[in-house]
Image 1 (cartoon, rainbow, N blue to C red):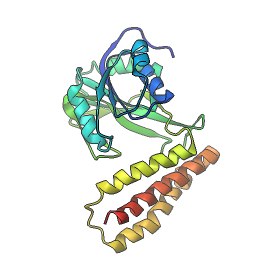
Image 2: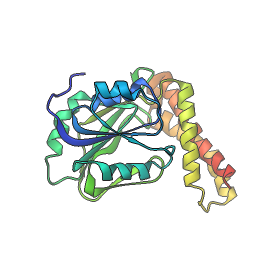
Image 3: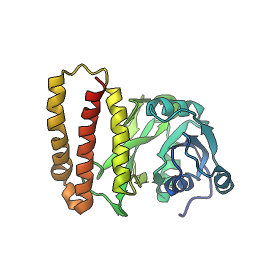
Image 4: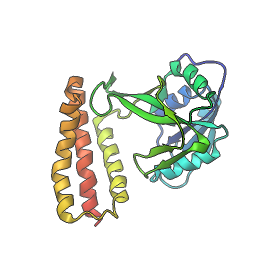
Length: 254
């Protein structure tokens, strides 16, 4: 990884909840930032080894990671710099993006930046489906930003938000079993978030029958997921299962 030697004046925030090589790669990719905040949710990483290899500040959280917006807003307050970049523990900042990051944070007329994220599934980039052209706000001015929703959180920016060529590599699921475990976890959190929904049992039942099928068709056909081969098929099936499980868990919560 060819990284710039001069530090960029931003704070990178990484949440980690498990010990694996993906987090190490994420941390390595963030090293050009002058401040790196690692918020640890009991990951059991080898911290003594990591502190010898990388520069970062560790923040310990005793409770499990359930409300993503709450934790991200907390991290915003603790960041030292005006600009903050949120990086997941299974992502890497493309080394070629640092020059653009450094250029954008010097602008006075913007408050948020969309970055491109490329999902890598079984060693291949997914070009289609819902992850094929993902753009998310990850670089933001601290005082203009706030996150909402406890899961699948969204950054709300008070000010101008622009697109960019900044690129993230997303190594989300190493195995299909891990993929299934992740969607189950997030479906439970999403169902808890929707607990106060006033949907009748009849309407929830209709959504349970219809939405997962529509989700599959959207990913595999409308968004051309079939062009990603078997990987696109697996992704479409599992994302439709996520849609199903959200509604099944919603029934359980009633």
